[in-house]
Length: 329
Image 1 (cartoon, rainbow, N blue to C red):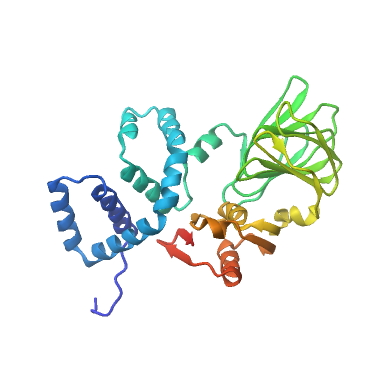
Image 2: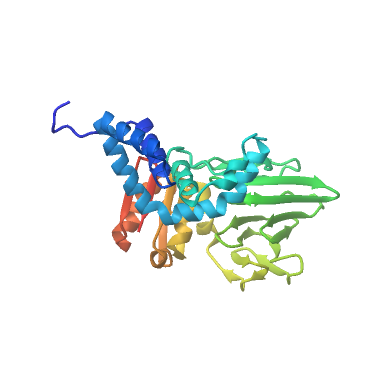
């Protein structure tokens, strides 16, 4: 290698550097420090990988800590489901080590593995992968189109057709059979007989958009029912529904044709959508930036191009690290 040639660490060296970084943030022993020094000097790529890991740590500490908090119970459930004999050390992890594990999970596993997703998929009947739009036919011949990275559970029993939207969004073309058709998401539900509509999980609560027919929406089991018709939409969260309003439902549902359409939507919600189409992780650090509004239509097949377009308009910084993690601030 010439002195001027760039040093490019291998994926294994990058992951080793993250592991060392986590250990050094967790009260390392004298022996650990000595071993780390030997590792660092063994290869110039080790020093480069460690420098990159420090940058990632600095940029990602806040969102990774949030992930560590949010996924702690889910991760414990994952370990219990696997019946791992050594699951108890999870409870003894220091904050720094748990944070580092979240960083490794965010970066080293390109599909963006999460404990909660794994648990969701175990109880789902139909799942779409990140970036995949999938249509399934139910037992009553109703069709469900799953948006990217979505999951549903289906229960047709006791004279009722019931679907639980576990994650993401789904568009329903319901066949009339005489039995009620109910889609539950968060605390609320949408109840129909024959119609076409979408139910979408949001950062908080859920949203229902009707393309044709009539849908009765309640924010929780004791909530007041709102009747939606074609071209109407309503969102609800924490047992409270917003006032229904008129939308361009064809544009709102254009994700089925590969387009994401927004009108005065927060960047946080846009990024949440893009995460379902991106094979790694997208982390938004700036709360003020997250609240800014976005309007426009974007192709869902290229989340990076969407971010580049938004960056040109909104002026945020974009950092791509280790090929799978995008940090916005």
